[in-house]
Image (cartoon, rainbow, N blue to C red):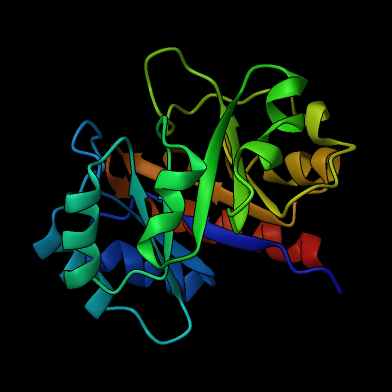
Length: 208
């Protein structure tokens, strides 16, 4: 049986983290990019992770952050996976003694085709919509048919996903992992528990 993995990103409160876990999320994402309305600091991240049960992965999202600051956060917050959303290269991403996911902002098929060669040490790639001035979390989607024949490195689908379209997205792309943030929010930085539950329920139905 295929299991569609789900990550709820942009978690900003312990309550939202608990709601995501209760709905069945496999992972929660913490944004350490101060340019985001969903950003958290170390103190808040500690409160969120303290509310999580075992076996839920905590993913830290960085955008062009310094190695020094990343190490400081990793030393204080229990992070399992790092997700890089900026212009980082493989050499930078692999230095932190954590598995890493690299976000690829997709404009054309070549962005997908070349990604694995550019990031050979990535545990997985995350395919998101391109935006000229923003690094993810835009609510925009890209042409999902570009992924229909992709069979390279493990990957995650992101970009404009909602409870209403995640089923279609998985059917078109064959995704085995999906990542959502804005599509399950009541307002910027605040999750809607009903939307979170609906999103994960749809992914779970597709897993059967």
